[in-house]
Image (cartoon, rainbow, N blue to C red; front, side, top):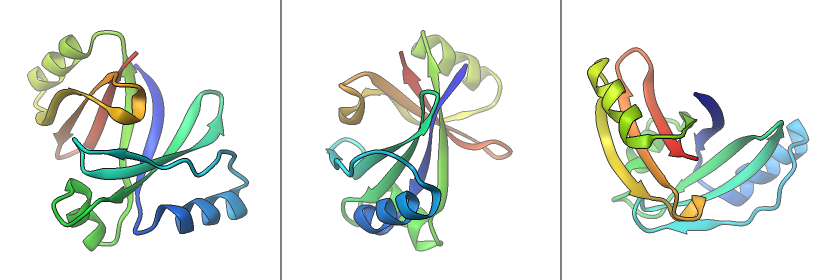
Length: 130
């Protein structure tokens, strides 16, 4: 699998975007996308070579990111590209991962499907169908 992005849970996308842009010189506009399924607002910064940093802001207390952010936020997940999302989810479940969010269309990726899985050692990962 190829890494696509790292997701950071932040309290405020605009402020975090400015911090990453100024301190690390990252490129990208602060185009915010609302994802009603995940109940988050997201924006992407380009790291280079097709790798991105995703800023994730909860869109209310019911957002899955809200609890993580209450503990301090920061690095939330790594996202990997896969050509066969269903097969990769099944393989990881076979390896002991737990499905947190089953395959679903994602607004932030032009309705390409994503899935979130958790493992106590690896923590949270996202799979993005390419």
